[in-house]
Length: 101
Image (cartoon, rainbow, N blue to C red; front, top):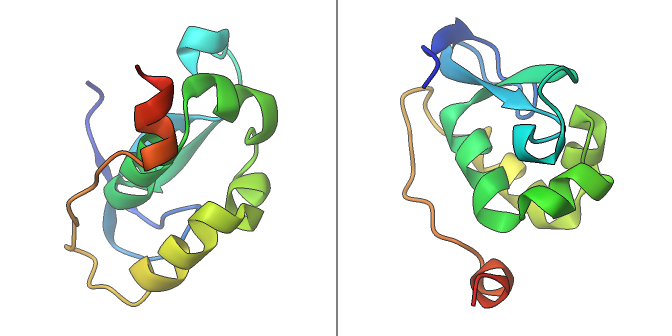
């Protein structure tokens, strides 16, 4: 796993948060050399809890598309109000659980 850096999350805009590298096209879907973004740990976890790598590769390949997605908008609105050290528990969405079966 890559080392987390401290800075501003490109998705929610919170400052002074631990960030990890998010491959805008998942590595498993051919995105090894594609663009990346720095996301706080909660935003990064939430994306992967809500969507499969195939969904991300098909329609959520930019920070803007992630910000405009209805499933993420309420989370982004909530996480922006949280302290920079907040890392909430994340669970898979029901839709993603069903796809895993």
